[in-house]
Image (cartoon, rainbow, N blue to C red):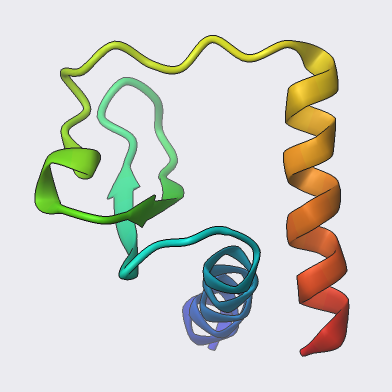
Amino acid sequence: AVLAEFEAFAKKVANAIKAAFPCKKVAQEALGLEVPLAYIHLIPMLSEADVDFRKEHLKLSDEEFKEIADKIYAEFKKL
């Protein structure tokens, strides 16, 4: 039951991401080999290359992260 609730929440966040940013899909990746838990990554994507974790990560300022979070949250509240 908990996993189903988590998935429903992740889908809602994915819909907010898709509304906030231009993308074809929002990929979902569950990872957690290094720690005894899993993280669900929701990644806006235009192509499969956008989900390559070997690529260098974006370097964003705290202000940029906040702007992105605010944009996603604004869309989330509309759902």
